[in-house]
Amino acid sequence: MGPIDSLRWFVPELVLVCTLLVVIVVDLVAAGRGGGRSSAWPGILAVLGAGGAVAATIGVPILGVPGLVGAAPRWLFGRMLVLDPFSVFFKVLLGLALLAAATMALGSREVRRRQNEGEFFTVLLGAGFGTMLMAAAGHLLMAYLALELLSLSAYVLTGFPRHDRRAGEAALKYLIYGGVASGVMIYGMSWLVGLTGAMDYAGIRHGLLQLAPASRGAFFVALVLVLVGFGYKIAAVPFHMWAPDVYTGAPLPVAAFLAVGSKAAGFAILLRFLHGGIGSEGAIAAVPAAELLALAAFVTMTFGNLAALGQTNMKRLLAYSSIAHAGYALLGVIVLGETGLQAVLLYLVVYYLMNLGAFWVVMLVVSHSDREDLEAFRGLAWRGGAVPAVALAIFLFSLAGLPPLAGFIGKFYVFAAAMGEGWYWLVVAAVLNSVVSLYYYARVVRTMFLDQPAPGDPPLAFRIADLGAVGALSLLTVYFGVRFGWLLERTMEAGRVFPG
Image (cartoon, rainbow, N blue to C red; front, top):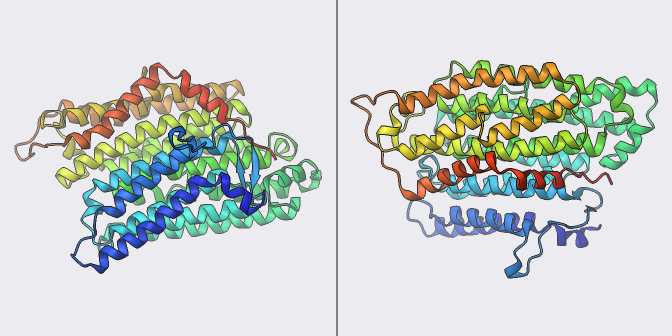
């Protein structure tokens, strides 16, 4: 499809772009009127824009908007983007991640007490736009541009507290690591173009099927270089170094967006590249790609869990936990087939619920206590925070993979997919890692319920609006742990990647 015809199927992204422009205008008008602090309208508009993008993806029958669900797969914008069930699935998931981050930012003291919060929501919308492009990219150039759009936006969001030394240091580290990873990735992409003579994924796949045996070594080098960039985006070891510092220094809404939205977008671009551009036959079958990914999965989940054991800062603990869960998700990635793809999609939805909920509870406690350490959660259940404490316990036990919570279902399917391909040692390692993770998750729960509050710990009071989101996420975490049939059907539909 050409550019004009493609616009009909580009509505969610257009909603975000239009919202971004409106936020800029509204913020400029508010600044021109003076009055010190920015108005609340940029944040409200960002929430509405993110919700509108999700609605435009799934369709709004009342307004006559058909949406993208069920649309026939096709190329868009001259084979730059792909419309298929896979991209539609991720547009919904990434739109919800953007919606959650914008909503969190509206209630976050780290964002609202700044003078330039209109700029924050503008960049956040730009980051959300980049994630959607990553999910639909069917061309190496588009994949690189989308990843860079998200990365540049994330650097700015991380360093948003301009006079916070910790945030500035985190943004600088993020920029350096990201620049190196992007350079390595685009160098590998140039090798792929030279080997196959194509930049769109369908052409690359066709070229690899005809690749001479003598060129398979060069293909493996190109594949490793490209995976460096994707591994950096999902925070897989050894490209994880930025994550702990960035999650700790960034405002909590930004850390939550990076842990949920950015990571999901990283898996989207990785899965699209492997299934749509590389495939499971031809040159990929002649190189140890699966073994390389299996090693990355093992090292990632093992390092993440072991590093989290001694953490006392909650943001840093969740950062290492996020690294470990990237390793679990990679178990499904190494299965280059529909079974593995569907398992990863299911895991990402479950991960969205439980990890976003954990970050949200941490944000509520930090906003009321100005402390991020584990001691801030001491006796939380008895200091007026019974609902957040119960919700966080549900999220943490779900992250550990305990039944009957959604995390157990997510891990079960990625473990089953890996076992179906004979990766028994890797599944055993993943189960042992889950047992290790239970220690540091249970330590937080013990602190909230069994440790007595100190005399200096003040009572906390949470508004009903603050508790609504964590309550809904905790209920969904429990519900999908028991009734996951609907979710499984959606992921099975989304597992069909358009080959071109």
